[in-house]
Length: 250
Image 1 (cartoon, rainbow, N blue to C red):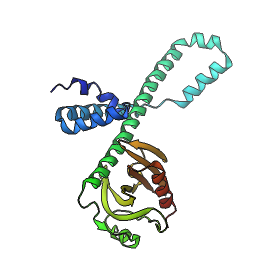
Image 2 (image 1 turned 90 degrees about the vertical axis):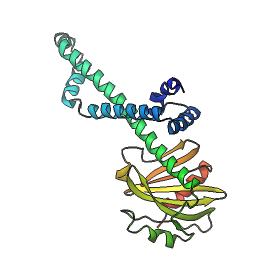
Image 3 (image 1 turned 90 degrees about the horizontal axis):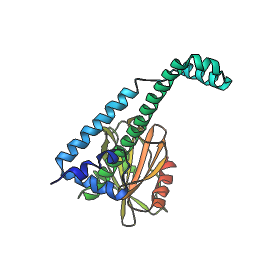
């Protein structure tokens, strides 16, 4: 098997720059090809190292303000005589800009990692013969079951009069952090609602976001100290409706 066509797409894949179809195709390949998966992890680790190095360099705000004021005054004479200093500042600015780009791309990679991991968890739920560890349509049964199993509590919505049915729940892990996975049914679709402590994922995603996650739709938002993710293959309007119910739960 030739790996070159796949390897050539890895950087775009890790940066989230591939189109949806190509992303899914490469994702499937990485699950089957150990060599490409190892190379993907090597490149991801390199990006993380570059990101960590970039965080050690912070522009001096006092120096930047002095340069800005000098330029604003139009002090050409000062600029001429201090050209070496300005050249050094420009060089530093270029380096910092480069680090900024790396940090942005690293954030995109982390976002894609989190979304991919959530999609994997949801797929695992769909493929399981027993998707829920606690099975009940009664929120008063499901919520107490999580006590002692996760380090936080949460509220479940009243579903009477809505198209949603609570199937059950299970404990899931996102980047080794335990959380709750609630499984809802709407018509013939299963929807997973993941709840984690915000500090476990706050560096990875914006507070409120709707996006595609492979062949699924995903909604995420922060509520108090918790981060919610709703993912499923039903329409985005269904996910927003479930999000609304969860946000008002007491």
